[in-house]
Length: 445
Image (cartoon, rainbow, N blue to C red; front, side, top):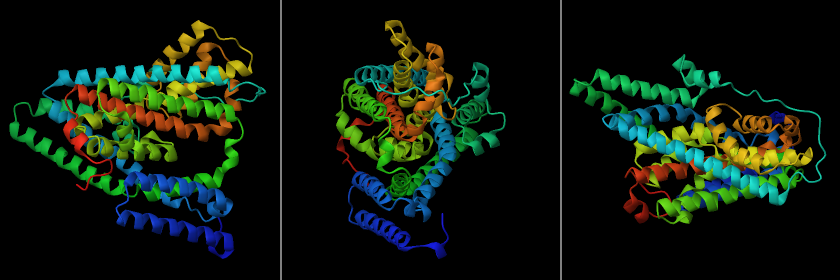
């Protein structure tokens, strides 16, 4: 960063270019250009502008537009999760069997798609062989693997205020469930109090969703800022080292979305997966640029409710659980590819038993590290430890973590969205008629 007195012409030109793009985005919105196209345009132009101006764009902090957007989105997550889960579960509180069935279906889908992602990542890595020609490095960066006791204890919100401030999703989900259980018992024989409690959270959820829609409308501007900062910081040269490894991750992520997840949608729901992915495109772009499933949760929830026509009570519970547990990219593709990569670099031969172990361990990891930070690094460390491979191999790829993390986060979010649709369809909470009647872009409601 530089002070305004230190600005040179490149600084000024970068600012003028940035404000010009923001003006164009505003004009495109007034001309009713599709939301998807505006978000995609913002990402591409942002990357190009950031790469063009490089350090000058960083020094004037063009990325502030993205930082503001991310802060606004993160501000929404906890009230959105708490209000929508409580509101939805109050409606379902007389049908606890349905809740158990929903959670069971969710876990089966999460584990199944993560295992499939690991299989895809492993097969692509075997074909491309990203570790060929890489020299091993003795330096390492350790990751603390959480114990089973810590995982269980972290689910219990010891101090709800601290959990809210820290933005931990799993304790908040547990807190919401406990509130609903307590409210059900307290108001069991008090219909007026029960109605008032339900009405309060229904209205609160609607208000938060309305606020979410307002902030989501800023997505093109936020994506532009994030993409510009990314291009300025890393540029095209960031993609040169470990090109085979990066290519392996991206191909595996693409196959997971367009073959595995799209295939599940076509088979179980019977709708055109390309149309669905078109509706989810803004969500995936936000995931790609923010590299955060947590920051993507509000726009994901709103998209599933407004564009995919899933009932809020299902969408809120599924997206919250999925953000914490369903990590197709970070716990499926990533540790599988890393295992094949490290084995090749260190000359370790893996057999069929190890390949089967990779798929099974990847599915279990998603439950073991639910809600922890840096899930990709921890899942890879666990995988290497289980297979007896040197964890020092992680030091070879840590420099390009930001590049692969963009693709992994996108797959995480896509997996959660599609799992939510499948469960909603099974529960009769997917409005197929309205979904098919809607146009591809946002509705004016």
